[in-house]
Length: 195
Image (tube, rainbow, N blue to C red; front, side, top):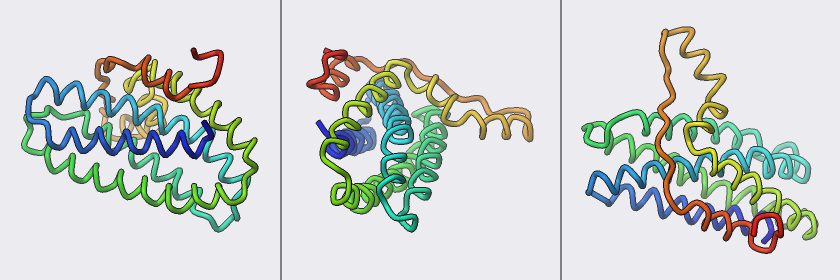
């Protein structure tokens, strides 16, 4: 699977998870879904930052929105961390979730219908295939670490600044969601090292 297909497939999964989180009312199920979304999204952001962003920078004109997209990843990571930091029963959870959803879905749309479409037009197919395999490996490695570990690396510098200024800034880590092995198997279909 090439990188464009990988990214789009993961974007559909992220969209589904965030919409499910918005509609599910049972607290235990909602809690598991929130952790699954956080884990999946953190691994996706890491894979995009390590594999997709350099590929975009290599092939697209300097005026393309590559730096903005990377900054949006930081904003999304911050907002999911913010969402993970409060109880599901909190009255601020629903509005926080709506804001997160709007930021996230706008980013996914801009990335897919802008940068990724441009990449499809200019990058060689072989390079897209090779990048797809690398993307899947990085994603699966990140997914095994869970949100807590990835949040520390994604938000580490910002967290350190906040902690220094305010004397706090703890990153909340959740329990890993089940069924990650199946997700990685789908993402890495066709690569010997992940079957």
